[in-house]
Image (cartoon, rainbow, N blue to C red; front, side):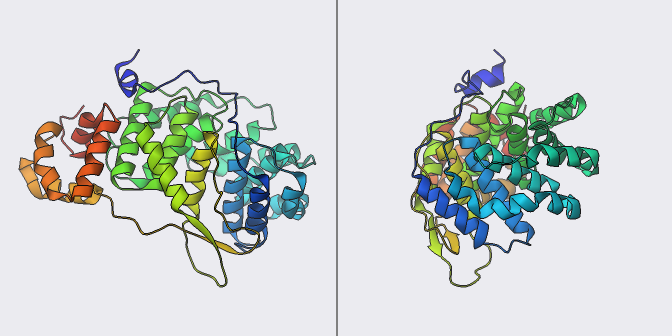
Length: 362
């Protein structure tokens, strides 16, 4: 077994065709779908497309029956989808995603194949500059069309995912690109994405960054990516995600409130459902809603980074030496988080050398 993959110690052989057995009351999701379809965003807003594509994608990928009446708020959108795609071709990925997931969740109709064929005729994926977006488009079209895979595109995505060096340093764009590469290549856990061992190490680096920063949104995505790739994340990582989701609340919204905590709520709950656990149980739903997370103690990533920067040439990459200088700078709670992060990965010392920007780090 390759050394880096073995070091993860939690890689399993997965049945990528098996979907999780999901717990949870379906009436909760019927009410949530009404809220998102009819009340959170105007239907002519791109954020309506984004949020509803994500919510339906979560439900479709985690399994579980959704009653037909729960999907009824989307009937008008589904019926008009061909006209939307014709007039708004720039949003083809959102439109396809919503319609294909509605069909997979049980909504009758045959628009999906025709919409995919229309997007293929329009050569919509070729208008994408990003390989990541081309990968998403390839996944969407392949759900209804018999396409030849783009081997060169797949190779470029895998090369990005396996490139060692940059994922132990905070870079949100690269971080979310890596998790989404795994999502698309694995079809959200339905098949083996074929990741190289280095990609698992990169996901481990991202998970440690997210843990130290208390970034539960990114941590949940990393855990999902690991599970979709056939690995089991460290239990402490998933405990942190579980606790974060349980603390969030959906509250009735009486007036516009700007950005809320919708996305962390969605992906933390997604991970719970992926494991077959209940999620979204405390949601207020059925009308306008906002998602709020409680105020939490700040993470320690920025503080550690500042300490390392201030050390200048004295900065070293030996974790066991540097720990003695960093720990006293943290609160007791911060020290506990650092200790638990160290214990969550057998690769922590290697991660730290990269995070400290030591050129000789492997």
